[in-house]
Length: 252
Image 1: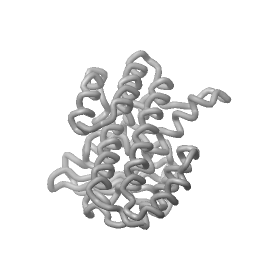
Image 2 (image 1 turned 90 degrees about the horizontal axis):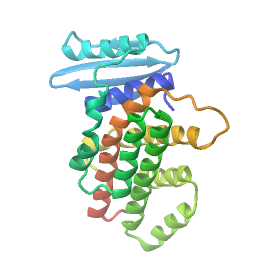
Image 3 (image 1 turned 90 degrees about the vertical axis):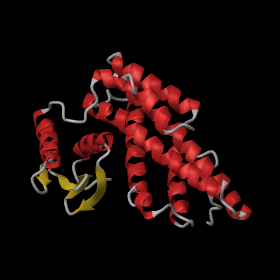
């Protein structure tokens, strides 16, 4: 869970991931800090638990971009990096270009999410994104399990995930993965688990809001759109890990 306001963090995270400028996301006292970089420029967006947003860094186009994001959130308008309707058409192909091995089920549900959004149903889009995320995470867990080198440990992990809820499976995977070796190189591993965890929880949470009809879900259309764009980065990271597991015998 973010120290900063959860809803605002999701919006900021989506904009940054969609623009592919994230350097690091860290939790500090009373806030979540997003460090961004573009070329030689660096800047930061701090989201406090009160909902306040602060931008820091030397004057640059990147800092101005961050200030525009801050203003757009405070004003309730579109920020730079938000997908425009015509850009949505390119997303399925972009996903396949960046993740050529992407499973057909993931792609199908992602396409359905886009169709829902374009049809004016962010709730439908959230549900379909949650389904696409679930399939991708199941593939990640299966890829990890299949490449645990020690048969006994592999069987133990399989029994722990078994026929469990997806959130339990994912928690078991994270616990096992933290104690496993080898690990990806530092450039990829730095924010890998944090990024996957944040995105997974968002897609699962919004899907559950729609799929459990007890109350009318409180979904922000802009947040859903930002996370449609972020989904490509999310799946790219998942498949990076799957390929890493396939290329290395995992010691648990």
